[in-house]
Image 1 (cartoon, rainbow, N blue to C red):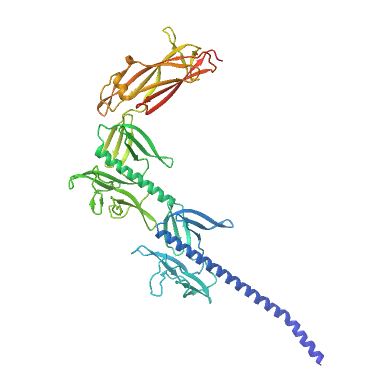
Image 2 (cartoon, rainbow, N blue to C red):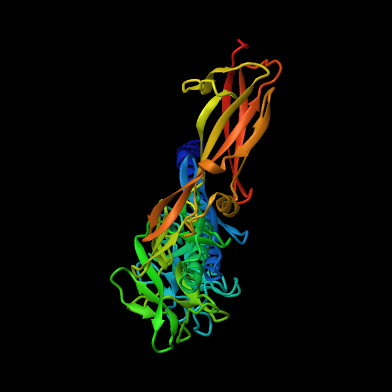
Length: 542
């Protein structure tokens, strides 16, 4: 009987073993799954807190007018998951893209009264609310950094660096990212940050800041030039030369050098989508010239003011200074006069005007470089003409081709394909040729004689034999000198033709196929020079 009972008990025990082991395996799997969820939640909490710190650093940069100097992608398995944002101050943050989940959404909102940003928190599907401290005060986004944690199955938040915690909503196990949704850096002048709660803000790039500052420098240069033109330029001042100004390799305007030595830099090369015209006109109320401003082609013209005062534009007055100032990540144009604080430039509705390089602030509409003059069109449509002192550089040409220095010689011919004169020269012979120089002196109405012209123009010619020969003489021909009239701006001006004869002696034995002579035309008493080279074929060298 005992043996039978023992067998029965043994059978029951053996039959239960698989059930017990199966239950243990299920329990182990559940424990491991729970640990994985805990580890994932802790990882998500840690990542969220890091991202909240990134938002803190970003908002601090925004409020301190810092600029973004670079953006680099963060990739995982070939997918962009975030960005490294570098600031001009030297700091940087890692910003990760948000994902869906039930994490409490930490965000920021701007207080429209003082312009500062404050922390917000959104629980579940409810609307975001301000984070407040124990006194019920809103918490600045550049002050204390909130922290999140999961404990006892709930989300908790601390506003005082973990000294105390407040319970939020339940941790469901489906936690997601909780701060940044995405960033847009397609515009080279600012970066747009969009948060999970829909809030967005902009931070300017260093490139945009630098370009706007350089642009304001150009504007201020134009204002100084404009005032000087209206107050001091008269018909006794003439344009000596004109050269192009460039910006980033593109045409930006002109540098106009007057005969007096003064240089006007006029930046007129940009194509503006919006225009702000600054001008000068007589103000009967002050009995002086004063600055004006007009927003757009159809805007009304108003006196330019600073601290409520109309700005005068007399010769010794300070010019107004155009600048930029950041407001919540967007730059607007400002104007300052002397030591006064910069003030917003306002449109006709009283709104600040956004600063962009496509929005042109200028006293000039256009600059035309003509053959005899430079025509500047002002913002109000008035045209101002400055006559060129010279049409350009004096021209130099061979008026008598090289020949042997005797009356019976024939002229050599220029081989236009090879660029030298044929039939050429032989050793130990003298050769003669003549150079004609045509010049203009539009800044004078005087009709100069030959000697008077040379003295005023500063024209001279020198020649050098490059190879085996030498220059025997360079002689000015007074008798062939001539002048010719040209009408400019209703006034008769003159251009002049002068001639120089050059005697060249070939060497005792040439070893090169072509002998070269360098001609140097100097004007403005040697301050300016242009060179021309002529070549003569050596008949005995093959």
